[in-house]
Amino acid sequence: MPTKTLPPSPDLVHLKYQAKDLMKGHGSKDLQAGQRIREFHPRFEKASDLLIFESKLTLSDAQLTIAREYGFGSWMRLKKHIENTGTSDNLSLPLHERIEDAAFRRALDLLDAGDAEGLSAFLTANPDVAHRRVTFEGGNYFTNPSLLEFVAENPVRRGRLPFNIAIVAKVILDAGAKDDPSAIDGTLGLVCSGSVSRECGVQGQLIELLCDHGADPNSAMLPALVHGEFEAVNALIRRNARISLLVEAATGRLDHARELLPSASAGDRQCALALAAQFGHAEIVGLLLDAGEDPSRYNPVGTHSHSTPLHQAALAGHEKAVRLLVERGARLDLKDTLFQGVPADWARYAGRSEVEQYLRSTEANRKANRGLHG
Image (cartoon, one colour):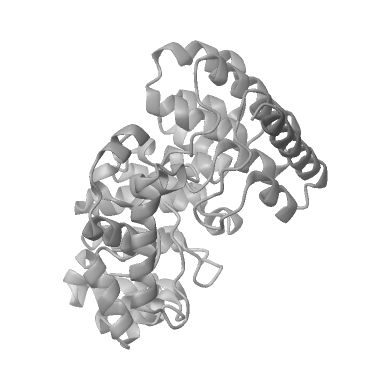
């Protein structure tokens, strides 16, 4: 659920105009407007385009969507942020510098230093800190983390982790975090979807520790797949995570994907198309298109939902998957909801000149044909 970033001096009046523009897009049945509403308005989380466009969208609905699109829980929270100049509302500061809870901040400093002994003594003297959460707004995840979730270094704050971070995590778990399943699962998802723990050689240790303390390996599988953390994927499988159509689509195992497709849910099929396109597994893209998947739908939440399968294939330069999606009718004019670029723009950004040229020439031909038959 990627969010937009507020400008340095956000204007509430301008944000109100954005809400009104969203209402106009809803009224005209604009697909991008529908995707933004589905992604950020909780009432429409799993609604189809048809249901979204048939439903009434009030100004309050539109304002809530805009607020959540910028990483705030409500319009009032967004308004308060704009009017507030407190430390926690300064989005330019690193996350740890925005924490106003002095005890939590001290525990985090000990965590960052890898001082397991000092952290253990501190949590013994301040046992409630292991259960506390801090609130961050203006981002798309890590909005209400516990102390344990900071061991993943995801989002990146310092770009490194102490070599003994698994021992530090064990200290936090023993201090009371072991009784918070949501924190343990949340931490596993962050560890499996972030690169810093892998680069520091501690990803596997943290996965084992968290699973030993009850983390559900299935809960972290999609984040690991979407971020291409295949070492984490394999570690989760070793901990008995389910090998689903999503796993096979992301890893390119066509025969297994074909076996799992008939029993897969509609949601898993859509996710699988997003993953197969992202990683360039054209044969699986074709398999899913043959099964009726729409090549022009925005990806579902959790799989780069601001974009379509064609955006992701173009960005990575997977020419065979790009051509297949286009030949099967993928729209070339759909803009992503975050950067407002069409797939050809994404190819250009990534330096995929051959893919960009193919997409632009194909779109020009489509426009010419529409003109001839218009």
